[in-house]
Length: 89
Image 1 (cartoon, rainbow, N blue to C red):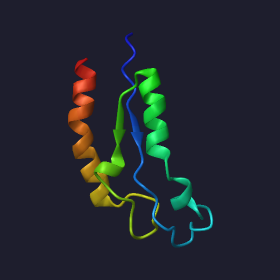
Image 2: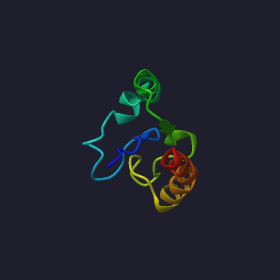
Image 3: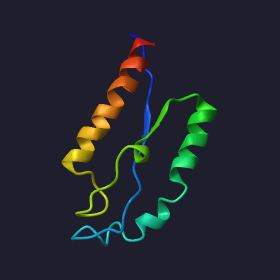
């Protein structure tokens, strides 16, 4: 069975965490800095397709970390043609 290509999706930037999960993600907005560039370098070295979700969506204003419903829809819409093209090979 053929192995499908792997698409790496870099998450959007973390905002300042809020709510009950904020201690778990404290400082995440600073730790995230440079992540898309680092992932892009690794993907380039491995020849792996990459999609930077931060170019399309933002993390939720509610908790600063997760995606809200609109962001999920926008990301899905943006990924649809990318995945379709990858699967066509």
